[in-house]
Amino acid sequence: MIYLIEQYKGEISAYNIPIVMRLTEGVNLSSLISALRSIHSRHEILRSVFLRDESGRVYQSALDTENYPLEIEEESYTSRECLDNSIALEMNYVFRLSEVYPIKVKLHELLREGEVITYLSIVIHHMVFNGWSGGIFEQELMTCYHYYESLSHGMI
Image (cartoon, rainbow, N blue to C red; front, side, top):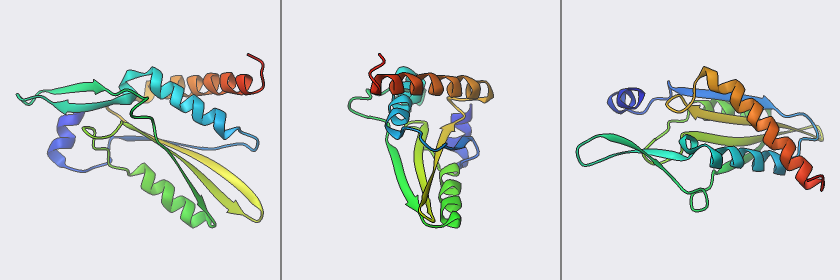
C-alpha cells in the first residue's frame, strides 16, 4: 500500500525512518562499516528493489551485494550548520524503490578545533522497516560491530 501511495503522490520522503547517532570517540569505522554491510547482506529486504511486471503487479527483487554493494557515503564539514543541513537532506532523501535500496547510510565528520566528531545517519524506507525493527536493528548492529572488532584484534 505504501508503495502505491508513493507512486500516486510522486516524490515524497514521508515514509522515511531516520536514525542519527553521534559516535563515541574510538569507534572503529572499519568495523562499523563491515557491520552495516553484514546486516545489509543478511537481510534480503534491505537489499531489494521493487519492480512492476507486465501486468502492473509490484514484486520484490533482491540484489546481489557483490555486484551491488551498500554504498556508505562519507562527508566532512567545518561548521555545525553545514552538518545539520546535510543530515536534514539525508532525512528527506526520496527513495526510488525501483532503482535503489530502501536504506541509505552516511558518515558525517564535523571538524572542529582540532577535534573530529563523527555522526552516522541511516535512513530506511518504512516499506521495509517499522518501529518494531529499530531495537532489533540496533542490537544486531552492536553484535556485528563487536564481532568485527574482535576479528580485527585477532580474538576470533
